[in-house]
Length: 435
Image (cartoon, rainbow, N blue to C red; front, side):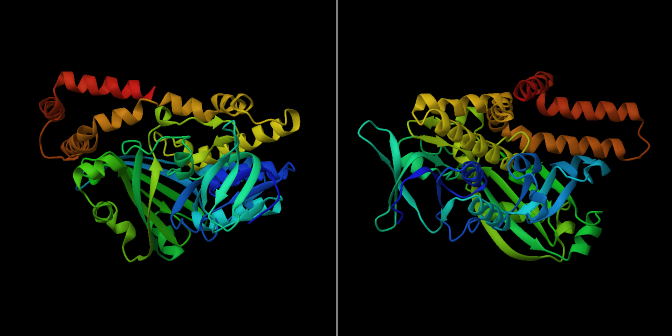
């Protein structure tokens, strides 16, 4: 395939792999990036959220030519029962700034653009190539990869595993355990196409403004998960995801869950008249801090989803992917220039820098949240959404009942359903998981 030796091989061309490859290539390292898809982004049809700060640290002028859809000016957080939602909106004209903070993107387009920047920086990018295994020397140090191509052995000083949540190369090499069904979610997504003027009228937008809706509640049929809707220029990304272990236990079909979300009275009008052209399913790491595998060793590091770098508390992923890729790349550049060695002891600098960054600080802050959500799923995704809806209806209906009586009725419904001790316990556990 490729006979020469490289300073670094990057496995994967998603946001994390592209960030790592770009960081090293622009500093003059000889980088090979391998992607199993037909082209970077070919496996991703869905929309996503791009956090500008993480990309700006890599490519300061990315806004000039990156394929961005809409900048987000409004965030909606909804708690759904079967017929209503209780929610919070935040919308600000401050987000119509010169350099917006968040954008919606189409991953297939964005990944292809990012990969072109990697090539322009000087990296060699080869697609339709699967890495089958890592190559080690007699001391167990990783010194290259074995691919599915003829004469597919390629050697390098260090290998960056940016292969996504499945992490099959790392698993085969014994660098990480097989995925556990309670640490990964299966998400199903669709792209609904509508004219841009219809989207703008429907969501009260103008120009390139966009809206993000994130929802939880009875729509996941008692399973631990969330749903979402993002506005793009001429399409709407809509999807839902739940823990794999819950799908297995319930026997619920993911596509049926998505149909249920789309049919909800709050969602159906937003999609009315749209044409569905794309459907995809993929895994999302949800295990949080306690599910992070070993991140480095002799001749290798792990970045992005392969390292469980997703902040489930704030639905952040692309920024953690790009940041871990960048930090890994910067660490390798530094070691190449100063140490010329990539032992585990030297590569521990990568983990140290992650500890100092927002990535591990945030994941450590919310390390109890995955367990709290899964351990209390019947109440969080069933009972409480229904109680909140009933409380709102009771309070808002003007029917001759005095407000003090309404307060008593609402409080009685909560106490009857959960009990005072249970309510206080749930509040304490939530506060503890969130702090």
